[in-house]
Every structure is written in C-alpha cells, then in structure tokens.
Length: 470
Length: 34
Image 1 (tube, helix red, strand yellow):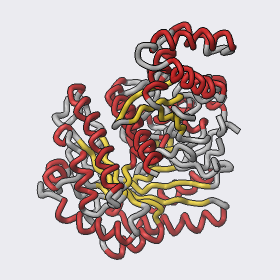
Image 2: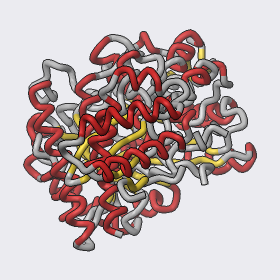
Image 3: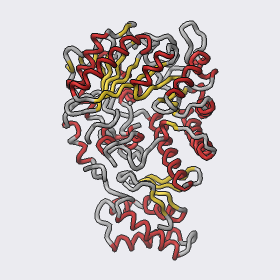
Image 4: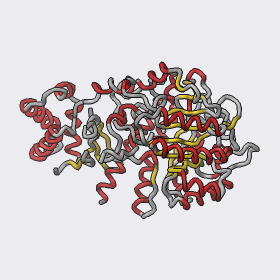
C-alpha cells in the first residue's frame, strides 16, 4: 500500500507498511502511479515479484508513458522502482497484522494519569468539554489524600515501567495549587523508594500564574501547556472570564514571561480553533509574532449542533489553511524566525516503534484520568460519563471488561483505518472523539480523519523541504 | 538514485518497551529507537 501526493512543488510517495518516504521526480511518480492503479499488479505484489512479472509490468509502464517520456528515461526510472521494491521500501508487505492480535494480551500496566486536581475554573470557555470545569457534575477540589492515593495507585500498577507521567489538569489546576505542590513533593519521595521516574506536566489557563508558580513549574514540570486561542478577538470570544470580560490581556504577558523563563522549550502554547476562526493560520502567526516558539492549535471538540462546531462544509477551508500554515512555517524557518508546530513534528528516523503506532494512546489501559474524588475513567474526555467509570483509587479497576475493550482498539480493529495512509501516524485516532460522534469507541471521527491526513501530508512535505534545503 | 531521494534510513523497530511518553502518536519520539 502506498500514498502518492504532490504538495508545494514536491512529488512524494509514502510506503505505508515500511514507513519509507520517497521524494521523486515526475517520471518516477507517474510510473509508480501506473503500477498502483493496476489491480493485477496489486494482487501480484502481495506474493513473489519475480523477474517475469517485472518484465511484464515494465512493458505496462512503458506503454502507458511512451508519449510523455523517453524510452531510456523510463527504463532508468523503472530500474529504481524495482530497487525500492526489492529493498522492501515500496509496495512493502504488512508484517504487523498478525502480531497485533497479541497486543491485547500483553501485561496491562498503568503508566500515565491525568490528575483532575480541580473541577472548577476561573474562565467560562464556551467550548469546554468540562463545562466550566465541572465535567457534568459538581465543583470540587482534589484533596491531598486522594492525590497521594492516585500516585500510589500508578506506582503499584505500573509493573516494570520506570517512566511514569502525571498531568495536573482540570478545570484549572492552579486553583488547587497547594495540593499540586504537595503531590509533586510526595511523588519525588515515592519515586526514589519505588525506583520510578515521574514526569510531571501541567495544563493551565494562566490566570493565576505568578512568579512563585512559575519558579515551581520551571523546577518540577517537564512540560507546561498554556491555553490561548490566538488573536485577542478570537480568544476573548471563546475564552471569557466568569464575568464575561476577556482573558487575553491578563494572560498574554504572563505566558510570554513563562515561555522566556523556560528558554522557549518544554512548553506549548495551545489554542483551539472553531468555525469562527477557520483562518487559524493567522492565530499561529500571531503566537509566533508574540515570541512563542512551541505552538499547537487544534480543532474544537464539540457537539454537532454547537454554533462553533466544525462542519463538513468547513473541511476544505481547514485543509487549505494547513497548507497555508506549512508554507508560512517554511518562510519563517528560512528567515531565521522558525517555530515548532506540534502537529507538524514528525520524526522520520526516531519516531515511535511499530507496536506503539498500532496501539495508539493507551487510553483506558495505560492512561487513566482521576477525578477529584478518586474515580478512575479511561481518559479526561470520558470523565463524568458514568458508563465509563472504571473504578477508584481505593479499590482499583473494577470494570476490567471496559479495560479489555479499550485495549483492543487499534488500527486493525477499526475497519475505516484499513486503507488509510495515515494509520501508522494517528494510530487509529482518539477513542473519545470516536465515541462522541459515532457512539462507538472503536470507530473513527471522519472530519478529524480528514484533518489528520492533511497534517501528515504537510508534515512530510516539510521534511522534504528540509532535506532539499540542506 | 537519480529519480528518488528517500528521506528516512530506518520493520527495524520490531526487534514495545512502553517507556515512551503517552495524549497524533506519529509525532512522538522514542529514546530506544536509536
């Protein structure tokens, strides 16, 4: 299985099963297209591609392209195609479907927790899936006792995993700041005893950031996600304070100070775009103009009927916008004013192993969310939906049936992923998004898939541009 | 090769430790895959 596309002047061929990415010229691009559109070839390539087959399809390519390219050039390009096939980096076979069946039986360990230390918020963001921080329930702050039990729970259930992750989340976690600090202190004590390594992170709207908080974050947090939607009018429309005033003017100077104090690394300024700012590349540019170097902006997760929800008719505009953003990314990189954009950061040589690519984010098994009262959910987006209540930090996991169901979610269990070129980059997508749009955790959210595919295409084009700029 | 430039040098990862960072899986990094 391959995927061919042209973007920003580059002819690109992705070999899906090997992960190989080839930047080619027009003749090789067209020759591969002849093969990929030939149903007989696609059947034959699943078996041995013998010399007699090579000769047969060589003639096929020449007959198709003889009016466009010279005989000698075609022979040369065909030779290179067959070299790639022999190297198993073009039309390579799927070696993984057989082993994915064993993945669910691998030992279940918990290695990451989303700790909801606060179910309350000092903002009233219109699109928040936590509904002003309360997650369809009551307001509440996690006690130190529940937090400690959560850290004990992950240590006890992490098996041989050494690296454990805890994200302080909400609501707004800085509204429970003393507990956050005490939990970090407790975690540092327990990690020594248990020979573990805690990677703490925190997601904040910034309203309560001050020098004392920043100093602690810089000492203890491996990453900080700071929430802002971009231009002032965009941000203040969707992220008002409880009294209705905007939040932009209060938080931007604080975020700039935090980003500088972290040497412009180990943070993300993270925005949400809605159908009110489908020109979101302007918001990314705004982040960059404000001096931020680590940038993420993502499509809103919203019920279909919400006025700000992304609709099918918005998709083409969004895809064009990702292309615009990729061109801006190149322009600024060449001007020496580059920035990182989270969803364009594919590492072709040191990316995840194939097991990770097949099995996805680990929600519901490796990754759990903990409410202020110690209840366990498959991830932060399921919190409050009691159908997905897995257990609690006192008694552990009680719904092992649900854990098994989540573990079986992978790129091969979702029929929609079978022929998708992006499957080993998105790993089957987000179970919560799938559930919210289809009622099934093991399906896909098609609008999200279209955006994902475009982001993968842009990311790889950027790698091509980087390679040819060296 | 004259007509093709392959961007990555590395199936090579088949030979699962679970120590990588958890929530687009493809833009994560692996410390083992060196």
